[in-house]
Image (cartoon, rainbow, N blue to C red; front, side):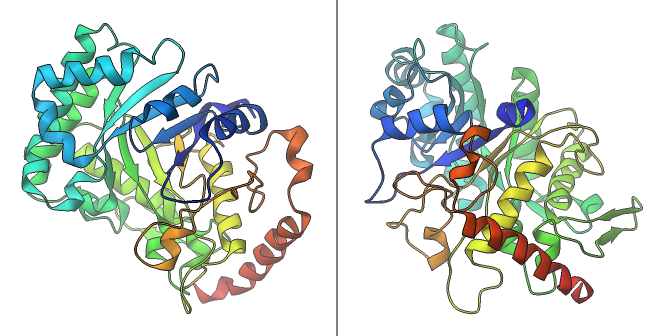
Length: 355
């Protein structure tokens, strides 16, 4: 249990009109769950104040559109004074993320300024004597890879490899910060690969370059990122899973989009990343992992599934049991959902020959 407490976080989005007060959420996470780290999508002072005195490790996100301004040291210092220094005494802020999946936007201005903004922000932290307490990084989607299958072929997209990722990875190495990736097996799932994505029994996918048989999609995705980093000589930089999750509701005919598969994925995810097994190319390690997301967000745009990644309802009741409640509270999770978990797990095994 201690290993889980040290590694599992949650993404706390606010694009909904039915969410409980942040102070209630903060107290619930601190008192009733094994989650001890939270990623926020801005630097809202009300949110930061809500997490004061909880000891929960907080990650703040700088919106993409602000990135160019952070190349100005004066602006970065003022931002630190306003958003960090005024809260750091009571709120455990551990990391600042500069943007979110910036390369996926295709915005050349934001991409050009990304690493310089991170460097300038670090200088501002240094001036405030906060550089040893707070890390700086930026999350990426798997779209930053031009090849990921098999995992040993993992390589960053041409042009970005030398001009973005080499200086980025050097910055991360020099500052002791992690490379953050957002892997979602859900997005690559079909009827044939559902068990593979859910960590359920399957024949696996063989990588002939390394003679490794991958039995779950998350390991393959993580190792493809590791191989891309290794090609640039930065395989010593730590990898953090910034987002991953599974929706509980979607549009008709979508594969595996229901509460049962969401429960299976998230429960197996928690067990796997905290097991100490690691991946075939990163053995004997755990992964700091942020599950997406804390709540459903009914104000989001896009397909139905985008609004249904939540682990908890607005009344802070778990939607299904994935092992995140503290042991003494585990009995309060709806037994019907728990039973469904094992029923579906058994039914999925029947589909083994489909792979």
